Figure 1 (cartoon, rainbow, N blue to C red):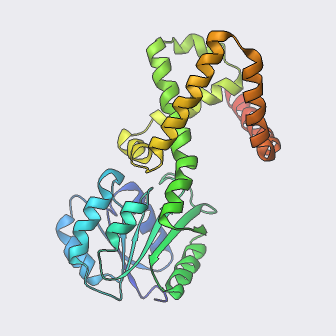
Figure 2 (figure 1 turned 180 degrees about the vertical axis):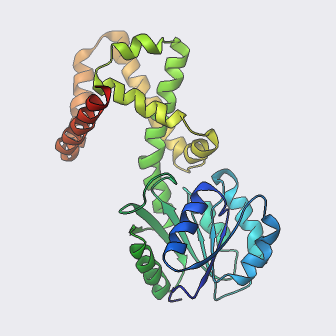
Figure 3 (figure 1 turned 30 degrees about the vertical axis):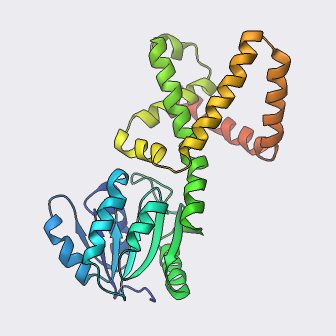
Length: 282
């Protein structure tokens, strides 16, 4: 398929924040877009039959199951099926139950973010090279950057990019909740660096658990990551019980060596964030 504005786009879940964002993007670039949502779900059948390109913008916790059901209504081989889920292995497998071409998509930005210059990952599963290239060209015209990988590679990658940082925020918040800390006192003693850490946790918690919990706990790699976290906690628990600072320093050194290629950039970028935070405080 060579994608052009004469193709009609249907977005199931297009009344939501992410689906609505993509509906607006495609409309701005000349595409005819139909959307359905919870109040217009009766139109899903006709959208699936009539639209040349169908995009699924569904809640992650139920996306694969819902798409599997929708595939019973997709009979067109000349149709392109896409989704906007944050995970891909099970979601792409569900779309493969349909008749058309299948490419998983994951926008690495939220619906409140200006998407220009942001990245969207493509996971072609059953698609001609021309279709993949054409979709990439369309997304580039929308101002997006693209990366291509398999669904399994995507989920492993997201375990690093999303699961570990979100788990860190969740674990830190849970420990602070257990300690019953007084935020007013703690923040009054925070340097900008530590305030930035707390702001990241607050940003994570200032959303809906239906967004983050499936990202964390439905990723196939999460059990492995939790086992590694437990192993690290056990190691540092032993260090604490023996007050073995030399062992802690060796571990720190090993981590520093691993992160060496990123240290200068991390320092300069975090300093820029701290300066911005200081200017806001003033």
